[in-house]
Image 1 (cartoon, rainbow, N blue to C red):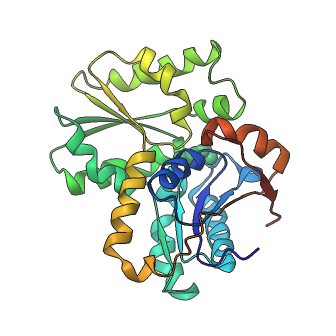
Image 2: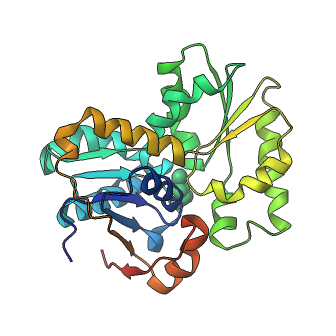
Image 3: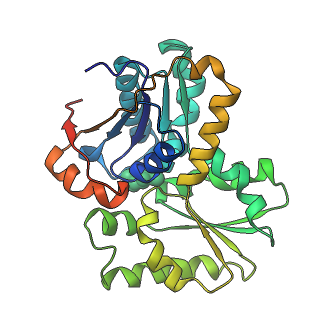
Length: 274
Ligand code: DGL
């Protein structure tokens, strides 16, 4: 089946499905190709070089399938690989292709959500260590104060289907308490990992009232709609047959059994050997 013209959506595993779901809701007429690099997930604990190499390999695969545009629906890949791919690799591979991430759209609006100008970030080790959120937010909102907390146990809890069980409360509360201990003026918490929306109910239980908890799916979808309006030269390369194909670098059966919790409906994936 030709994927010529599909929008590529990439994550280390399942998390990007929370973003794809919102994108498809906003732009249902487009074709999509989703790839989860489940065999090598999680990315959050890996080095810059490793995340960059894995992400670049997957981006090249999307290009080989004919995707003119790829969204890195993974904060860790956006933090550690996007800039190098945009600045160094695209010119060598094909400068007509585009790769976008999830950090820029989120940081662009972060300061408009917070009234106190004190913003909390919850993400993987990799995203937090990269400092991408504080750096990007300061470009758009120079006076904003940004506080970060890495939550290394959250992705494993989610991937192992433990996120709804009582054991998850300990780790959810622990990291929220650490984040909020940094400032009592934080009024906005950004879930800077595409897996974390699955923990939303538990997160809200442990966050005091009056603090806004924001996930990225809708923000990224809205930003993509605006991007395609501003870039008709990209939009016209995109096919619009409302087809979605799912690929995983690990077991397709495992992917299909986990994916619906992230995507909201069942999916049928194909195994990809990279
Ligand atoms: N979903 C990825 C993100 O948004 C992280 C998962 C992982 O550690 O692989 O950062």
